[in-house]
Length: 487
Image 1 (tube, one colour):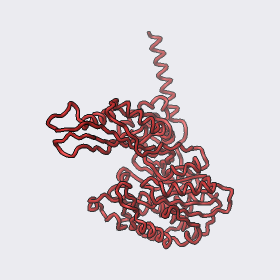
Image 2 (cartoon, helix red, strand yellow):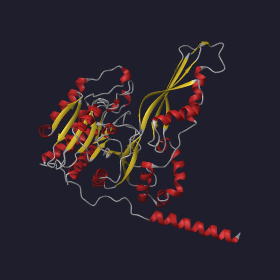
Image 3 (cartoon, rainbow, N blue to C red):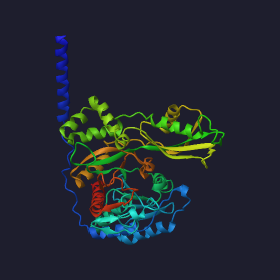
Image 4 (tube, rainbow, N blue to C red):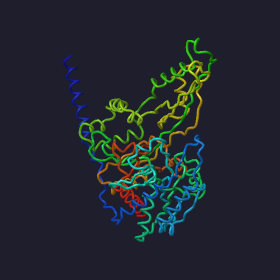
């Protein structure tokens, strides 16, 4: 027994040594040594131009609302960009695609270089009726107060559109001529899935044989105070997008009078199915982009967190358990299910003949729509509940982190956000970027704005706004990226 105890003690000491050595091994994620461009920028004038764009109501209402596209608003937005950025419109080619999306081409001097493709979208989600009084400033007034520009679309996603236009105008003003062709693609229906705008622009570029070195869209960003164990900001580059699907659960019954109910009504059967589904979560796992994120951020964490991140071979079950404790972090490592619609009945004393629920799933890259359907049917395990597939999209492929495009993007972030740790990340929502994956595998999501816990929910939320400082930062980032792409 003594020998066994000694052997166990030695094993624990060796294990502790391995953990500590791995925690100390490797330098932190350091910023680039290269200084950024020196760009003279009139922040006040840029903010005024941005505010003017927020006043134009380029709203994408849901297709099920029956509210048509406000064509005049998008034409007015096009005209506003034309007037606000004269050098861009004098020097770049501009095409209208599907009527209202815009494709700009800044021809480079070296046609052998693959182009740089930068995305944004002009449309915004509507403001929920009745919530207008809760906004600190009217949602479409484009007011500027205390260094903040207020308005729907400030973050999602007119910040990218105006940051790109400001950057291009500034580079043109200083006489810059790119070696690598730069393409700007601004969709008009991203909030509806991009089926008319981004899909058509991607098809057009494909027909021209365009294979970008790098595609950058919204998705990630610069997070402050969101990662435990690290004091610095984290610049998260989205390398993949979760998929999505709506499943409709339907139960039919004979109905009748509520005074003589059956043992289980249609509502009861459906409610039980929802409970079974919510108590049967999808398998979780620390793999793919999220594992790489922990391994990348780990060297910049304090020692305790660094020891865990450097030894995921040992601690990954512990990390998974901690991530599953919060809905926000649980979504990083598994497919999620959210019942969002429940409909049944027309009167309190009538048994409904049909009960219907809609469940929205956000699909982790390890799963597929087919496997989600199988999981749901297995979890519910009730032939009375029909499972019908609504609209959906598969998860995207995972973009590489060792490509020329990723290195170019990471280098630019380190120059313009020198205090931030750069890491890959999994995007939970859908963006226009997925439609461009037919052109290249180097598709990434990064919006160069800083977001903290209090501002993370602003996109699509009440009181959406962007600081002038963030607008300036976005402009400098895009200018630097275009510059670096031609070196």
